[in-house]
Image 1 (cartoon, rainbow, N blue to C red):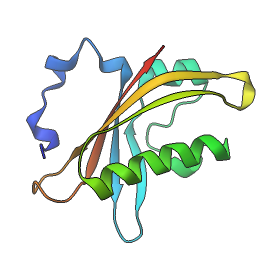
Image 2: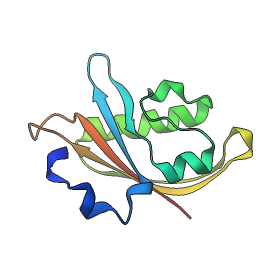
Image 3: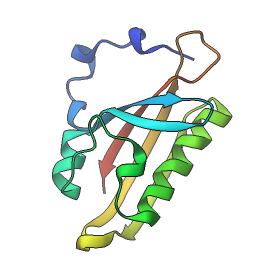
Length: 119
């Protein structure tokens, strides 16, 4: 599993607005957005940079995100999801999301890089 240091943001500039970087904390398992994708924040109407997943007001959407990230941590492999539903505030969530595990020691997932693309 790659570490965050294995990626240079300059090499990813073509997708930066679609990428989120999430810190993973263990015991208890929790997720904090180090960077929330700017294109996603603009589309859904809220920016989660610096906030926990628990800050997502829509309980159903919060559960989708938490379950997706939990699967990445438990499986220690990339997890792809296709989403097709309507969130609260009439924001249409029709997208593809790929979440990639990152780990400084190659074993423990300590960050997740998530790419979010609208369909």
